Length: 275
Image 1 (cartoon, rainbow, N blue to C red):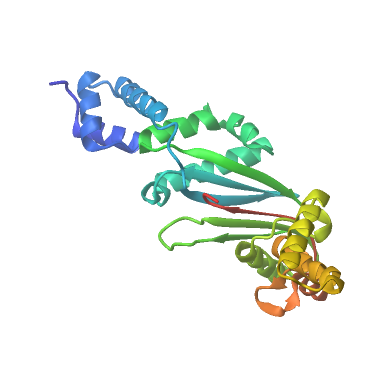
Image 2: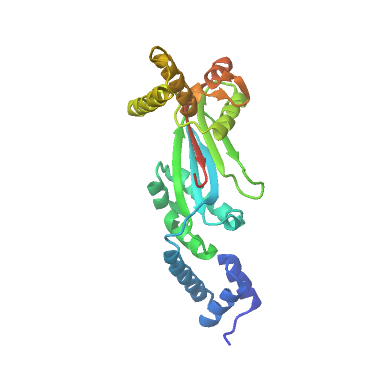
């Protein structure tokens, strides 16, 4: 049997997070050489990554970091909640976010090419996936520019890291209300800031749909224009932040809450893990 100590076994397990048996077997195969055993375990993990390529990733975390006049929001996904809540995965999320911010990355591709220690982020994720035994994907990244920011990270399960992340760029001095708007976005999931941001073709398509529905319901011809506009208003309330009823006081629109507080939203983003 190869000569290695319990300390060697402990060191290698802490380095890679691998199981007792597979770590011991690697040390035996490597003749007690820690570096060779590390290489063997990583090669084994890399082969596993290839087999996992087609697996789905519906768990994970969101994380955000402000850096001067911009805030970066990422979504890092894995396969199971067991891995998602683990210290190694959460730590990986922090390292990936930090590397992306430091590199000024504005896309997933730029973030994956960023440096993380002696590796690229892509290489780091691949190594950690091999160690954790799951497919890991940097699914999304967005950078919101602004003067000030409200960041809200929501846990849908107390045992898991944040699963919903919102960043709001704004101007004004009411940080508490800005945070309330971020919380509203996490719940209401608007797609755009105002109705003017909805593409014209989307509005036209929605108008045709509600007109057909109204006609099929036998609504009077004279009443159709008003009915159609009313239903379009309901559509805008679903997709446009400023049109929505404020979650904390549905007697007020978000636009009115912002106006009363002297705030202007300049941009926002919302990620939900797996959505």
